[in-house]
Image (cartoon, rainbow over the protein chains, first blue to last red):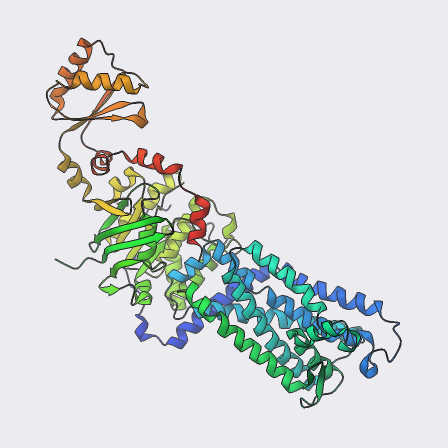
Length: 288
Length: 339
């Protein structure tokens, strides 16, 4: 250590009553979000892996069914175009499902305690930072996949369609992030969390309309797909890609009835709100 | 009498079958360097966690600078800096980035944050490595980073849980120096330790904690002189046994000037004696010689903090540590600390 250390006389920061709650909240939330992005910048494997896997699916699956007979799929679209919407949603979904991992590691290695000793204006800034980060990450990854799909000739939704797609993805990401964060606080360790993510990820994809329309499925699978949140995101996006930009058109023909684009989005919004309300008592308990 | 800056009253905390705090009472005067002395598992960490609002007690009250910590945790968090026992760092961030995050969490304006950062970096000798990733730091460097992190917002109260565990002598001395300076400048420093030397060297006042309660309290000199008498440690053999120790006891029974005699089983069945003064030593030697007992070593000292501990709790600190060593489960404790 240096030979002549100096310390200025203690000057504590201005008491919280003099600072605005909003300023405090944004300062702490931005700092926590910045940390997550710094981690990503130094460990870009998360970003790369999140794009690489869906990319492989898109290219390989699309190629697999390239010579499928015309008219096989409803609307007469090519399989690649059909698949595109599924892979885009899969990308966003996978990213959001992993939202809880950084939080779980912070719990396990004591970093969360460091955050809890600090005079945060609201401990929900920890949750908000996670949501901001994961939302940005999944949207960036999804856009990368959309770009690839365009390059492969699987279509592009156009300006208004793009907005529709992003809004749909946003709602799905919120819902799944809420679920993942809830798991991160409910489960005892990262091994358990990774196990749950692993078990949930692929089956949920297969039991949706990502890879095949409901008309191809046996009744039981059709019901599962029609209740799967992923399906409620995939169908509006598929419609947007097909140029059907009106939200009042039917996009999902489910065994229980037909749903318009607007209704699908509503389901997603309700799911997001519902999940966050559900995990709120858990978060309150763990974060206070 | 000015209000103490920390007041813990009748704290109780239970973790399943384990009662970590069984009615802990503590008052820390403003501007002192206060030590909590006790073996691992005595309840020091639990008490400090409750103080820093990380944990809620089952019963009891916590007041910090007149504020009720249970009712106004955020106000209390602004006042204190906490340096935990296990440094929780983010391996991929640099020290500087970690401190900047810390500063933002404490709502320091950017200019002040940078000023404090440079100041603390210089003070703690961090300039050379503050821009390297935390994952590359040695134990001593992590501790210094943690200390800087706790001091960043100029807290009026700094709480440290076992700050020098596992550090080399140089790092330890350096941290001691910083803590003394902080106290000199008016910061109240509360530290827990299971090192007698540390508490003796640093603390203005100390409390001995065992079994979740404060057993003794006072200044080091005060506690030691209150004991009175000299301490003599007698070994007839390097490692003796129960029978021989009993025999030595009997022989010395009649020796005048011996106030207390305790057989120290954990340390080779040596005898810890409290004697009136030095003059007792000669007759003691003669008595042993007359009974044909050899003397392997005979050491004498003024009462030490270890003796204070022994008097208060019935065993030396080392014995207390050994006793708990087998029964503690570090993995379970880690789980406990996990939120």
